[in-house]
Length: 232
Ligand code: GRF
Image 1 (cartoon, rainbow, N blue to C red):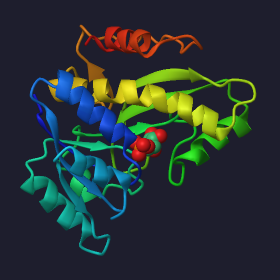
Image 2 (image 1 turned 90 degrees about the vertical axis):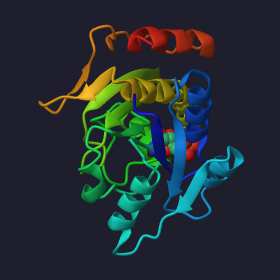
Image 3 (image 1 turned 60 degrees about the horizontal axis):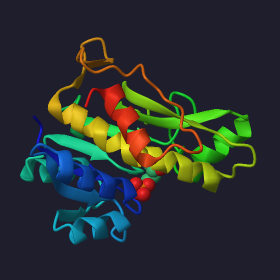
Image 4 (image 1 turned 180 degrees about the vertical axis):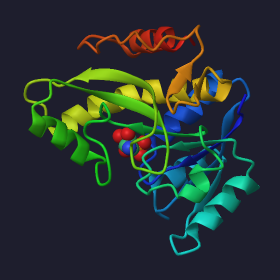
C-alpha cells in the first residue's frame, strides 16, 4: 500500500479537496502528506492549510527539477498525484516515480489533450469538434503531457446547448468521484504500470463498465457504478 501521497496543483484545488475527503473516509491509511504548487496564490495551497497538510510553493527556476525531487523525498512521497497541475513534471521526477505519478484530464484522451490543453480550452475544443461524448481520463504520467497509460475513463455526455462552463461542471462532478477512487486503486496496487507500458488491473477489477451519466443520476448512483467498475 502506498500511503504517502503528494499532490501537485496549480488551481483552486477542488479535486484535491475530493481526494483528501475520500482518503480520510476510505483511504486505508493512505493520505495526502504534501501539497505543492507552481502558483503561490493557488487555492489548492489554502485547501492544504485548511486540512493541516504541509504545503509548498515551487520556485520555477533552473533548479526546479532537483528541488521538486528533494521536496517529494523529504516528505517520503510514494505516490504523486497531479490535480489541475499545469506544468510538465520534469523527467528527473517522473523517472524515479514511474508508475507512481497520476493525472486527471477532463476529456477522453488521446483526443483533446497535450500541451496547452487544460481547463476551459479542453471543453471548448470538445464543443468545437461537435463531439457528443466527453468524459474523464485518469492516467499514469510520463515525460509528455497527457500521453501516459490510461488507468480508467468515464464518459460524460455533451448536451445540446452546452457551453464550456456547463460541460466543465458536468465533467468536474465525475472527476471528483472517479479520481479519488482511481488514486486509491493505484495506492492499493489494484492497477499498475505494466512492462508493455499499459495500465494493468488485477482481475477482480474491471474497467469495462462505463455507465452513462444520465441527467437524473445521483452522486450515490454514480459512486456505486464507479466502485463496481474499479472493483472497490
Ligand atoms: C480539473 O478539471 C482538472 O481535470 C484539470 O484542471 C481542473 C482543476 O480543477 N486538469 P481543480 O483545481 O481540481 O478545482
